[in-house]
Image 1 (cartoon, rainbow, N blue to C red):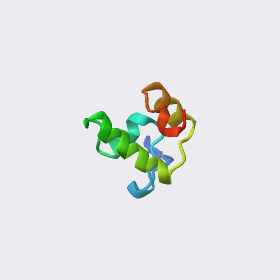
Image 2: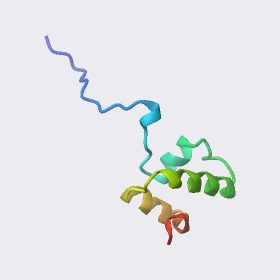
Image 3: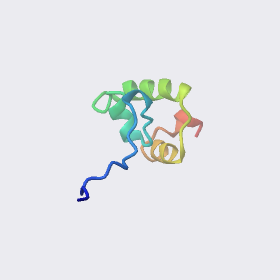
Length: 71
C-alpha cells in the first residue's frame, strides 16, 4: 500500500528560512502592518546581512523600496 502523502517537501528550519519577496520579508520581520518608516528600517537591516535575490529585487522595486538596493 502506498501513501497518498509525500515527504518530498523541502522544509527548512525556521532559523534557516530566507524570504524571497518583500511581502514574505515583511511578514517574517513582523512589520507587515507597521508604518512605512518602520518597514524600511527593518528591511534595510535585513539587507545588510542577506543578498536580495531576483524576486526580492523585483518586489522591492515594485512596491517603492528600490532605493534600499541602490535604485
